[in-house]
Amino acid sequence: MRTILLLGAGRSSTALIRYLLSKADVEGFHLVVAEQELAMAEAKLGGHPAGRALSLNAEDAGARLNAIRQSDLVISLLPPHLHPLAANDCLAEGKHLLTASYVSPELQAMDLAVRNKGLLFLCECGLDPGIDHLSAMEIIDRLRNQGATLTGFQSYCGGLISPESSDNPWGYKFTWNPRNVILAGQGTARYIQNGHYHYIPYPRLFAESVRIDVPGAGRYDGYANRDSLAYRKAYGLETIPTLLRGTLRNEGYCSAWQVFVKLGLTDDSFKVEQSATMTYRQLVEAFIPPSTFGTELEERLTRFCAIDPEGPSMERIRSTGILENEVIGLSDATPAQILQHLLEQRWKLQPGDKDLIVMQHLFEYELNGKSHSLRSSLVVKGDDEHYTAMAKTVGLPLGIAAVNLLRGEFKQHSGVKIPVHRDFYHPILRELSVEGIRFTETES
Image (cartoon, rainbow, N blue to C red):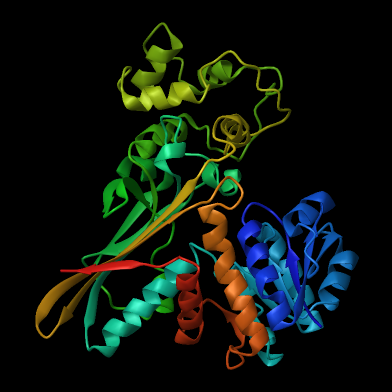
C-alpha cells in the first residue's frame, strides 16, 4: 500500500489529517504523521486504522531520510527553514513533495534536478499562498479566454477571529504561527499602481494601511505584502498597471500595531539585557527616548507615538499588559520574542472559539471597449479551536493535491511549481467547493 508521510502535526494539520484519513481506504494509501512530540501526532490521528504516528526530530538526518525513503509522497508542514532538508532527501530518494510555504531560493535552485527526476515539488499550496493562487488564476484565465485585458488586480487575505469569539480590543487571536505574526511585514513592501512603482519600508507599513470593505464580512485594515511584484510573472501579468497583494486585520489593528513597530518591540535582531528580571513596563520605558516630554510613562508613550491617550490605539496597547509591572521571565530574549511571549498569553484561542478567514480579489479589466470590475470574496468560519478555518484553508488544498498526485493527475508536471496551472486549480477548487470553501463573485 502507498504511504503519505506528513512531516509536522502543528496547528494547521488537523483538517489535513482528517481529510486524508477520510480518503485513505478508497484511494489506497496509509498516512504516517511524523512529529517530535509523539502524543501530539497520536492525538491528531485519533486511533484511525489508516494512520500511524511516528516520533521524529526533523533535524535528525538519518531518521528523516529513513522516513522519507519508506514513503511515496511527502507533505511538509515543518518550519520553512527546514523544508530544504526534507526537499534534499525527497530528491535523493525520488519522492514527490508538497508544502504550503513560499518557494525559497534553496528550493528554486533544485528545479532542474527535480525535473530531471520526473518529480513534482508543489509549493505554495495552502491558503495564502495557495488558495489565493488557485482562485485568482481561475478567474484570470477565464477573463483572458473571453478576450478581456486585465488592468488591475488587488488581493487581500487575513486570518482573523469570528466576532462572537472576539474578546479583546484588537479583535485578534493566534490561529497560525505567532512568530510570523510578530515579524509580519518586515522588509520593504513593493507593488505597482496605475503604472507607478511604490515602496513602503517597514517603519511606515502599518501606518499606511488602507480600508478594505468585504461584502458580507465587514470592514478591515489592509496592509501591503512584502513583494507583490514577484507575482506578475507567475500570473502572466507582466504588463498589468496595478498589482497589489496584502494582508487583512480587523479595523484599528494596524494603527495600534504601529506603536509596537515605532517603539522597536518587533525587532528580532538583538537580545535585551536582563530580560529575565525586568518588567514589561520597564521594557517599554527602555525604548522611549529620555528626551520625550512627560512625567508618566503613558504620557511619554502617547507623545512619542503621536496617539490619543484616551483613543482606541492606546486602549489596545493597554489590553496587552505591556504597560504592567509583570516580570518578563525570559532569558536572553529579543524584543520580538518578548512581545510574542506576552501576546501568546493574551491572544490564545479558548475552548469553543471560532476563527475566520477572509479573502478578497478585485479585478479591473476591459472588454469590448468597456471597463469592468469583478470582486471575488471568500469567508470561512472555523468549527472550534482545533478545526479552525485556518487549518481548513491551509490543510485541505494540500490534502486534495496529495490525493490527485497519487492518482497520477499531475503527471504532466515536474519541477518546483506553484499551483497556477489549470491542471492544479481546477480539481483543487472543485473539491474545496465540496468541502464548503467557495468564492462569491459580483461584477460591475
